Length: 612
Ligand code: G6P
Ligand code: ZN
Image 1 (cartoon, rainbow, N blue to C red):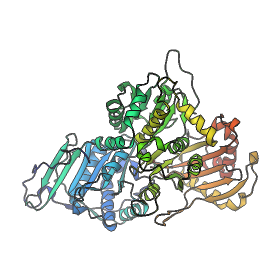
Image 2 (tube, protein in one colour):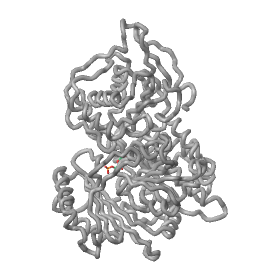
Image 3 (tube, helix red, strand yellow):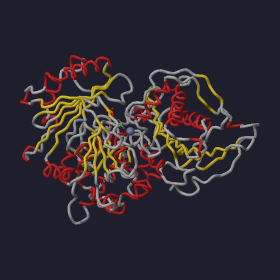
Image 4 (cartoon, protein in one colour):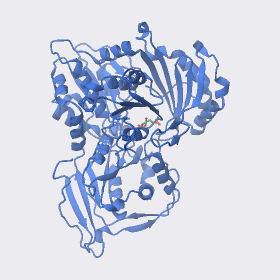
């Protein structure tokens, strides 16, 4: 429950006009705008496109129409949450959505202060229980996640449903279908602009008194931080942070996470503000690319003594490299974890968190972790942990939304899969405390693990690196690397996929460079074990006889053109071969992958844009 006084209604009548006054809806004629199909995570386009007449309005109306079809009656009194990552065009979009929500019959609108609401915090706010008339039925999240922001960059909008998770595909398909047939939308043009800088509630009543709408500007930090405090042992983490040999640095990359990081690390855990990098949200993310990886989180990797390939860089004389570093993306659902001069791959991070779930009170108190899920391209490191610890393991397509059904299954009276941890190679990790991945959660999970190993102040610090190396010694190492080819011509990328899918039979059984032999070549298809829905064409897979894998996918989040992703994985059980660099261990497999896809011929690219 959010703090008192935030949700409380103050009665301020803003209108004295006749009839519905400020609540008067108008119907604006429009025409379908092509290309409004939500991708992996909502609709993302250039800001200028969103600023063009009716563009945002059409999409928002399509969402309201689809909600009606799926049984969400927004006029019943539940709340609509609105907030975003603070990127350019957020303030304008908030006002438009508010006026359209009013016209579509929404009676309670919860807007985050200054419009700032991280994606996991939005999920937490929706999930806050409360009386039905007040509980949120969903949220508009205004974010294009890690895509660059600013007037000439990307804007994005996505809708999350009442379980706190992204709308499932059947709902986003319905939204899209409405965008192709829409002829009008509803908006209340006279509804007063909301001052999002002031906390509190305003009740706007129609002139004839027949209707009222309550707009509440709430603190976007409070609910989420409160939730995190019920999950983790903050005292134990604080003890770790007080060790003289431990230090932390956190890079919010000028996205929405800055204020959350200040609250958690400085106000709750007692760290100095100097441990925060880029902690002030900027509407263009400071001109950077707010994506926590080895290419874009340059400030952090520099401080942590790691280069863009994940290699250790020697510290300058007299400079102490922090023991722990982490970063978030624009909307704070992603995370990157670093130790001193050491990069933890997201796939390893997931496996290690799962292996240590019992050090986190949330899991320990619920009788231990029961299930884990990873997206198909994520490495199999977590599979080994799940097997040894006897947990259910699920392999889903890329996209956090696929985890939602699994996490909800207990609540829906289905199999006892929860409590649950999920993760993706794309720097996403989280659990069933919300229905989004959660950048802060992942960092607190790592700090909990470090706190667990470092309880004795007289013993030398057990480092991130030593925890990872110990994990490899126990389970073997899944060497893993991802190559991204950004801004590829879309039709060429599709032709490349076509080339691969049409030659599956031909390559099966073939012995390629380094002796790699294709055991299975196919396209990944997912049948949701909860509702039976089928998702096809979720990535081209080459599975080799030695257990190695090569996967190709076209990104579902690319702003313009196509991004080809190539994922490579090789398992090494030999304890004497755990210390190689992934690019070395996977060198031959890269050649095999390039050969199988004919990538250079199709895309014209010799080198990837990003390696993670
Ligand atoms: C978003 C989604 C993730 C997904 C990622 C990569 O961050 O929330 O669930 O893994 O995009 O998607 P892409 O289609 O670009 O590989
Ligand atoms: Zn994100």
